[in-house]
Length: 444
Image (cartoon, rainbow, N blue to C red; front, top):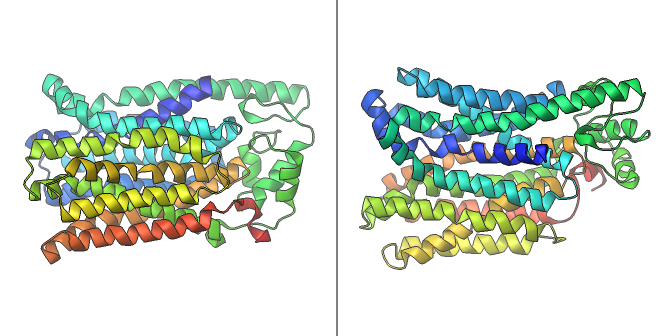
C-alpha cells in the first residue's frame, strides 16, 4: 500500500505545476516583466524538459537506481516550485520552472517502470489509476489557480502545489528505508534480495542480470541498480520468460522497430494534445465565442481525458492486439477536428467531446510501455526513448500550428498538420500493437 500511495501521489503531482501557471500569468506579468519571448520559453519548458528526461532517465537508472532517482526527481520538483514562487525576476522564475519541469519529467518517465517493478500482475489496473490522476491534475489545477490567486496572490497559487510533491516524497522515503533494511537482512542470511518485498529466488540473480543486458542496460549498471548483493530489479517473471530473454543478443533501443513505433505513438499523441491545449481557446474566440466560454471549453476538453484514462488501460490490457481500440480514438480525433474546422460555432460541444475522447491514445501509449517489455529495465529504456522522442516532437507541434495559421490566414493548414500527426500515430500503433517484447527484438 505504501508503494501504491507513492505512485498515485506522484502521478497527481506531475501536472499540477505544469497547467497551474498559465491561468495566473497575467498576475505574474504585472509583477515580473514577462514578454513574448519569455512567455514562449515558459510554454516550451514542460515538453522540452520531458523530452530531455526521456533520454537521460535510462542512463541515470543504471547509475543510481530507480528509487534513488525518483527521490531526487521529487525533491527537484518541490524545490523548483517553492523557489519560483519566491522569484524576484524573470530569469530566476524560468530557471526554477525548468528545475520543476526536469523533476516532473523524470517522474513522468519513471512511472511505467515503477508499475512494472512493483505491480507486474496488475499493470492494467495501476496504469488506469495513475493515468486518471494525471488527467485529474491537468484538468483541475487551472480551475483552482485563479481562486487561489484571488485569495492569497499568485505566489501562493503556484507554490501551494509543492505540498503534493512533498506528500509524494513520504511513501518513497518509507519504501527506500524498508528496502534498505531488507537488503541488510538479505546479506545476513546470504540470500538474494528482490526489490518491492518480493520473495528471493536463488536462481534469479544471474538470470535477471542477463535480462537487463538484453535491453542494452546491463553490465555494471545492472549491478548498481540491484544493490550490493541482490539481483537487478525486475518484475517477478517465469523462468521460461527470463530464459527466453537471456537467449537473445543485446538489443539497442534505437535499433528496435517496436521502440520507434511507440515513439511515433507518443509523438502523434503529444503533438495533438499540446496543440489543442495551446490553441483551442484562440480558435474558438476567432469563431465568435467569448473568452470565458472558450476557457470553459478547454477545461471540458481536459476533463474528457478522465474516462478514457480510467477505462482504456483496463480494456487494452485484456486485448491481444489493441490496434482497433487505438484506431477508434484516432477516428474520434479526426471527427472532432473536422467539426471544429468546418463548423466551429455550431455543434461545438460535440466536436470538443469527440476530440477530447481521442486523448485515450495517451493512456494506451503508457500501457504499451509495460505490455511490450519483460523487465523493469526494459520498461525504463522503452519509456525513456519513446517519451523522449514524443515530447521532442511535441515541442514543435504548438509552434508550427500557430505559424501555419499566421501564414495561411485560416486554420485549415493547422488542422492539416494535426492530420499528419494522426497518420504518424496510426503508423506507430500498427507497429507496436502486434504482441512482442522489446527484449526479444533480436529474434524478429
